[in-house]
Image (cartoon, rainbow, N blue to C red; front, side):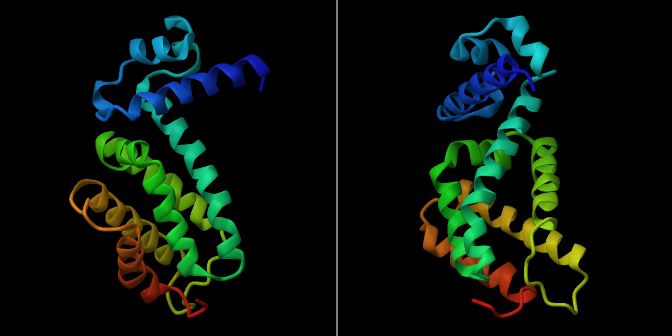
Length: 180
């Protein structure tokens, strides 16, 4: 990819992340994004057909960072620390996570879930061999996303440790072989 394209997309993603700090993803418009990024309005549409596609690009970038953060624990087979890393990452990126999992609407959440499943399918996770791998991945990813969405909207008083424990109890223990 051309360096200018990479730079412009980075500026637009950074602008989206900054605007998400204010809260409501539905109030973010292309006009607000380009003003924040310092690029022209037409430039936005040369890179993205709409705000939702930029939001999904932000999701891809965040998932890439998350996988890098979680990978060392997964390589060690330490699922407990991997789960804690996921929760800490979501907590650190709370506004963007809320936009992707709750505030962006069903279409954005479904696409984020599908992309998370694809990431997880590429990892060597120690699933119970009596459960079809594709099903285990979908159940674990879906469960994690559901619990994180709950935490971001209703479970605000729960600590990151409490949420990690919920994820382990409700999704991981049932489908991952004991390696923690």
